[in-house]
Length: 577
Image (cartoon, rainbow, N blue to C red; front, side, top):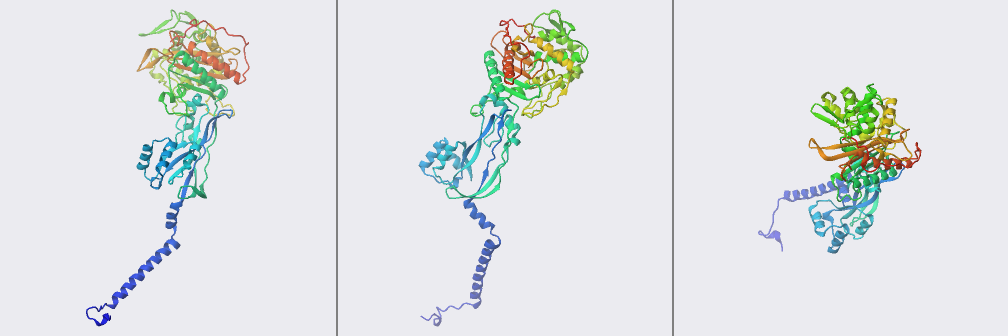
């Protein structure tokens, strides 16, 4: 058919329209060609990025956390390899049976598993820190969109014995408590990363490049001696159980170096299983809790008086009938001793004698002594939550406050502070800096009292553990011991609780050349009438730990090895409360 001959069918188009259409089509091809050249030749990052997103992944490489060891290299905290299972919900593909098996392996109820996957967007952890053998069984399910990361889990071989000292790490292997938190930057290291190629099932088929090398954390050698720590913990536990105490703590210091050889607390917990953890178990009471130290402060009052030239060990103090009134308040002794020498005031723990000595001193002199031995300020060990205690400014002391502070009332300290303060008697008048880390050379101490005064106090403290003192149960066969008992009412709601006590003992040995300082504290012993004095409940702990520790350290005896005769129950001289 000839369409051009028909006036109806003939189509007459302007020439410019066909040419314009040709130009438009040609322009489109030129734009597409230019875009192709631009993307593939000049700027191909976009296409490479899109392509790599389908097969390339950047994986984090966890740094191995540094070990924590005791002073002899025994492992206290180590990191073991574990796996974490995670998923990208939109890529996840599994059958009903695979879902059931996955939930069983991860110990997650199927409904909870579905909830996590439905609520997540882009990324979700299904289970962290699972054992490698469980992770292998998860891999064998061959579920698309399910991935695993290598991580580390902290393990503490000592368990509850060192729990409050070491602390623990969280799911991200970061320190949460104790040494783990205090030395986080040293132990943690720095994680690295690498680029890999994965197939559609999420399995690595090629390791393409290392982006950043992982830097493992540094190992940490503590001053702790595992042998002494275990001994201290076991003896403290026996004492807390026997005395039916609410809590307890013990500190063992090397008098030569200031190193903390042992530090134990009760109640405690197992850092490897923290499913039922309470605040009371977490507290490192020896460092973070404070209490009124009671009669353990009497030696410092006497030291000030001797340094000031006010008294000598033989000076006589009249305690009359065992009571002393200051204004409306009356100070009492547990026994009526009449006239006593200053040495006997320490030996028999007379509150009246200590108060009279204190009132003969300038308040500033007493305050300076307490301040110089570290009361009222944190020990600066770097341990989280270190307590500074309470030491009021001497300008505000009333006479009764100065008198009671002489025997440890109206002032609060931590057990660690108290142990450190006693290093002035063990180290010939020098206060030793403390260290939780092993030290290679003994540090320099700070002179607080003279050598002569320190040795006089040591002799008095040695008298306190004799049969006619308040702590004969603190003696150690083969070693001369010096120490002081303390018993104080607990302060609650601004007043003293009538039948709640804090009992303590601080001592050193061998007295001829002190190697160790040990401080023991029991909170609310309640085993019965009279079973709350420091000489009854705390001194035996000191004796057992000191004797065992000195033998472990190979310290030679300084007195004949003769069996010790302990006084009958209830016959000891009780310190005044």
